[in-house]
Image 1 (cartoon, rainbow, N blue to C red):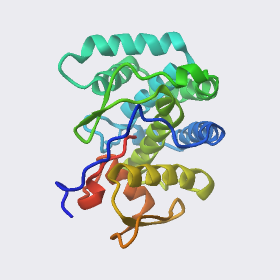
Image 2 (tube, helix red, strand yellow; image 1 turned 135 degrees about the vertical axis):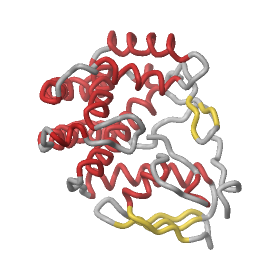
Image 3 (tube, rainbow, N blue to C red; image 1 turned 180 degrees about the vertical axis):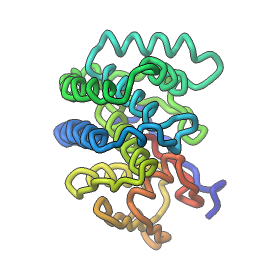
Image 4 (cartoon, rainbow, N blue to C red; image 1 turned 45 degrees about the vertical axis):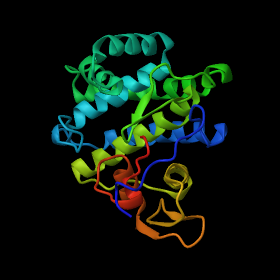
Length: 257
């Protein structure tokens, strides 16, 4: 199967989280803790390391993650960022305007202060996400998201429970790769996060498939009968689906992070 024939299945209605809320909130809090632990291990030189996100070094990437956490911790800050990003979007993508705004917000902040601010805001961000009312989580996000060239609508709960954790996790992967440091992975955290990604990917492409992901975050999944075997490292699988690596066939079907 070529990349041209591997198309994502269109979800009926806004996309909602598949994870149960308790698990999603556990992953959210733990991922903030792991991201903070990673930052504390960085040397001064490593904050200037280039990442795989164009134009971002580690410091800029942390500025983005910090600002996203600040929006999760404060409704007022979240609305401020959203209003300004909408104003800047123009003919471009909203998410690009938002992340550029977030990096700009902390452009002149030194690494030590970025770390201190993240340590302060992370527990409040986890608490803010945990306290998001059900009625808000069930609402549609006002701005459609473009995934693999297709516009789709998300429920707020998909953003709050799933995407904000995936985003932080993937940037933890980015920083590990940029700095050459080991990535801390466990089955009870990273494995659960990857399993959710794998299940969504199987749903999105809708084809028979056997998936075998290796490493501490890996596992096995199957959809339908007599499908092709896709076997690779769990982190690399997620990198490919996020657009950071090259994938063809079914691996050309993206999953948002």
